[in-house]
Length: 232
Image 1: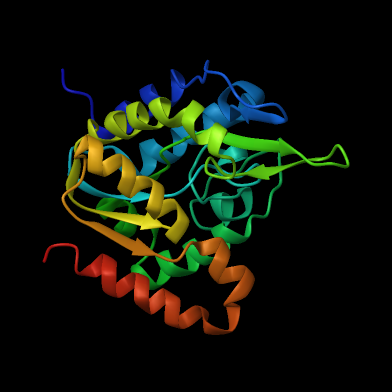
Image 2: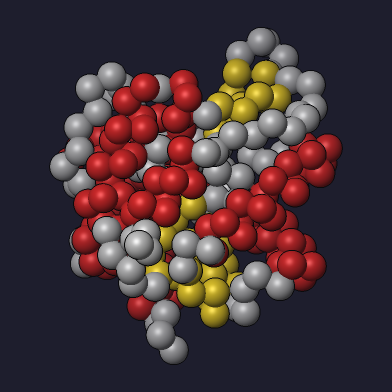
């Protein structure tokens, strides 16, 4: 029997492990292993919004943050919006993630979570959280491209992850990439692997919330214009 979209995503997340090397002072966090409740709420989310066989466009982030998908297992979704918008309460954690604020404001403007998630699937080329030890010893969020050696070490895993995401049944005629620096690296991968026909680049939600908050509505409109032209 053919698995629906939700079952395939859940299966992907269940087997998600990074066994490769990392540079000194970098670590990978796997929320499905580190937080017992993460697997449970992630499954509730995908069963709620993805229990069908319809095609979706792919929105590509960078890698999960510790306070968003690094806890909930749902990209760009902290525990606040998981509960207030999606109706799924996480008992063991309470997180606020600024990218999630923009993303769910945009989703509301799009027509709501049910409508949006019927059309789009969000994930990352490196689908696990990365942290880096600072000089003071504290661990901070990191991006896969923050260090040239890190990117080279995780590149093969990223390519494999992107191919697995696509195999869920995604429409590859156009992909939406969040973040200009992220797009530079995805373009390099796409040049070699030929994964997507067209790459459309949007500013990353964190950048918008942190540096362009006064112009937030303009960026929401920009997202909607790009995403709602998805069939053109």
